[in-house]
Length: 347
Image (cartoon, rainbow, N blue to C red; front, side, top):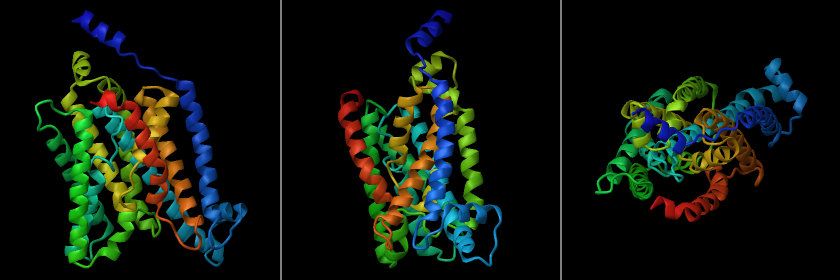
C-alpha cells in the first residue's frame, strides 16, 4: 500500500510557483484598486481620482460627486469585483473536480438553472426581496447542475469531460428556453432582460451586505479544501489511493460552486466564460496547485469583471453595452481555442 501511494505521488507531480503566486496576488490587488478607481471616475459625470478617494474616506452627502460615487458607482464596481471572484473560483473548482478544461458555471447549466428560478420568482412572487431571490438562485443552480451530471452519467461510459460538456449545453438550452417561455407568458421579458444580458447596474448596498459575506465565506472554504481539490484533480482513483474521502470532498466543493454561482447570478445575471478563462490563465502562471489557483483566480476574476464593466459603460456612452456581451467577445474565441487544443484529450 505504501509503495502504491508513493508511485501515485511520483506519477502525479504538483507543479507550483509560490513566488509567482505571491507576485500575482500583490500585483492583482494593486491593479484591482486602480481599475476600480478608473471605473468610478469615468462616466457621464467626470470625476477625478482625488475626488474618488475623498468621497470614500470623507463622505459628504452635500457634494454631488460624493453622492454619485457612494450611491451608484462604488457599489456597482464592488459588485463587479465580488461576482468576478465568485465566477472565477467556481469555474476553477469545477475544472479541478471534473478534470474538464471546458467546465464553467455558464456552460454546465448552473447559470441557466438560476435564471429559470429567477423567472419563476418574478412570475409568482413579484414582491420578493433580494434574500429570497438569492436563495431561489441557489436552488435553481442546484437543479441545473443535478440535471447536467445526471444526464451525463446515464451512459455506460460514465461522466467523461465531453459528455458533461454536451449535457451542459443541452440542459442550458432547455432551461433557458423554459425561462424565456415563462417570461413571455407572464409578460416579464423586459424585467428579465437585465439578468439575461448580464450587468451590474443597479447594484446597491443592501444587496452587497447579503452577497459579500456569502462569497467571501465560499472562497475561504474553497481555500481550505484547495489541497484536497489538487489531489482530486489527478483523478478519483488517485485521490482514493492517497486516502482521500472523495465523496465528502466532492459534496463540499459542489456546494461551494452552487453557492458562489447562485449568488453571482442573483446579482448580475447569467454571465458565462469568466469561470472558463480565468482558471486557465492562472494555472498557466502559477502551476497546478489549487492552493494558489483559487486565490489568484479570485483576484483575476475581480479585475476582469471590473474592466469589462468599465468598457461596457464607456464604449457606447451614454448607452450601456451588456457586460455579458463584452466578456463573451473574449470568451468565445478562448472557448474555441480550448476545444480545438484539447478536443482529443476530452473524448
